[in-house]
Length: 338
Image 1 (spheres, one colour):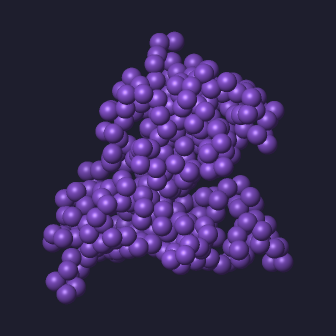
Image 2: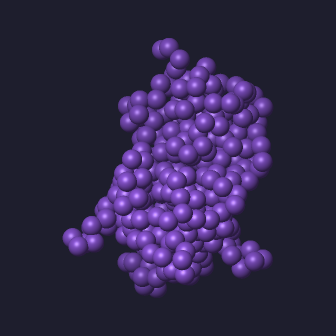
């Protein structure tokens, strides 16, 4: 098998790990040896390319067996093991937030700053962006490139799948039993919205809200002023965002539609007269595209303002699995893995 690569997937049995497997199969990534790794799931069976694999113990695995490792097991695991792989000449794609803000770690959305990968001369750690940031910037980057966004305000409405299997289970349990306790979240999530994602910081923003600001500045432009409010909602899958932004140049709805219609990975659903707009229930079911609707422009005090609604699959799509697999495809295309 020419140019086939060896891959390790840490967190193979998790919510995102299973979607990474599906995408590797769907996109026919040329894989020779596949190593599913874990800790609590060691010994469990998973399927990949119609073959059964046994999850191996990450702590005993020899990193030199692989060309690339995908870490989808949280910050603690990444912090403990990821650099061991890099030290053994392995590219690492980490989906946690552990390394995103390190100056020497590229934070990659292939459609936006994937050119960074072309200049890589040695195996290193590559960070996958926050789920809300990836879908946000897919829609914002073309506007910024052409009309200069200088102020961005976003409210995110984040599905429980972003927290993991236990959160999905807790939502379903609380729907069935009104007396079920809140364990994963600080308050009950069923029939509720919680204006808190992650912990509160000293500035009264949550860490999730600051991630949106930090990562937008790192990936897109350090000069954009960003404010976010991140809300957990009783939706199983699919993050939604209400976005308000200001541009330095005059902009119209037609400008935005023309730009986004020509952007790979973005699809517009915007026909208010027929009640057509994206929703997580309809548009975040193992979908790859970022969906944009409710596009509006207005001039306020001679300032150019845009409002829009963005929906994407936060697990399978750009929020996690898809972005990681696209990074792999770029590394292969640039002959970095063989």
